[in-house]
Amino acid sequence: MSVVILDYGSQYTRLIARRIRELRAYSVILPGTASLERIQAEQPQALILSGGPASVFEPNSPRPAPGVLEQGWPVLGICYGMQYLAQHFGGRVERAGRREYGKANLVHHTGPLFAGLEGELQMWMSHSDAVTELPPGWQVVASTEENPVAAIAAPDGRTFGVQFHPEVVHSPKGMQVLENFLELAGVARNWTAQHTLEHLIADIRAKVGDEKVLLAVSGGVDSSTLALLLARAIGDRMTAVFVDHGLLRLGERQEVEQALRPLGKALRVVEASEQFLSALQGVTDPEQKRKIVGREFIRVFEREARQLSAQGYRWLAQGTLYPDVIESAGSGEGSANIKSHHNVGGLPEDLQFELLEPFRYLFKDEVRELALLLGLPEPIRMRHPFPGPGLAIRILGEVTPQKLEILRRADDIFISSLRDWNLYDQVSQAAAILTPMQSVGVVGDERSYGYVLGLRAVSTIDFMTADWARLPLEFLDEVARKITRQVPEIGRVVYDITSKPPATIEWE
Image (spheres, rainbow, N blue to C red):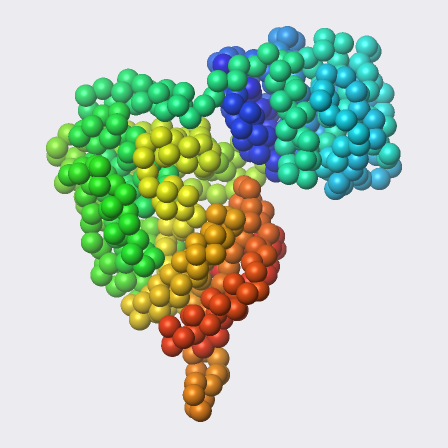
């Protein structure tokens, strides 16, 4: 039983799915043009039609497959989804006189979709088309000062359209609107961490049977949680391989080994630092560095896998998450294929493993909830995302053992200070970046030249956009003083105040 979200290319589609799950209802994203049979396979209790960049009156605009809206499922159309509902059921949509974008107040709202909400409501708008004529029997249930048709309701009392985006943080009461829709639709609200854990264990046991599973552990929350989950589901028929490529943070290898101590002999740690650093020698191009790290990881893992495959390992487990699947596949009509994620592809086909991805329909916050139930230590459970190539892409230019040592010490001061000031959990990701630039300074009475170190901290919900974190000036002052005193090779510390976009979160 699920809420099926039909994706028409909105940048917020993943966020809709997350919000529905936060309300304890299971949600799944399908392409906007998914067949009726594909949708029925998900046993939907309700549909949500996402927003998107198209106009419904364009001849090639995406639309639900024939018969989808005639099944009697409750439907919520958001932005483009509302406009399609209006047009489909006999209304009219036209190009608006001006685009309504950003914060807007609902000066009028009524009916069960807005139950429990009073006064003007701030909502986030993003549209250039407008509903100018309602379908027969439908009524307007919300308006803004500039848009008289901001939300509409069908006569059945379970089908609605909203011109705004209730799923974004800029719509403070949007979650209440979504919850009201779930209540009106009669959607089951039993999607809890404990329920998910029991379902995953049963599913793994049914799929794997008496066979063995191999897992690559990166040290992040996803693969570490999966290791503990597999151990609980199938015991010693799982082996986790942790490759130390020499590009980890200070003390990270020991932290991972300690966290996964319950695995016992099922954890295999492979020392491969020399192999990776040798391959990276003399390389300065960031994309080439990424490819080299990926290539060498595959070589190391392939070597380990071939040794283990003789012992009857049939399954290869990966901590692939739902956003990885969505971004790699390009879920919506008109949505871009953003990336080919390393979890979804990249290992040699001749490894002869079958893929096991228990988390492929989960979001990061849901995995963290499972980690809590499975006993993963808090520092790893709430750890910020860390790139697969590790510190190789946080050293601008060539990666050397000396630069790695400098960056590890500086990065440790930054991250430890965030924890000491109770700021670590208030930011989504933080990093220190070692630049190749050396800047003049004064140490004692002598002129010196030291590396310039960049500090980066961002706040975000989905990592598709991010804002630079407003860390206290007193904190930044303390960190800069500590770094330049304790890491003498660094002569200057700068703080990155660029948001995403235009900048990415990583510098390389």
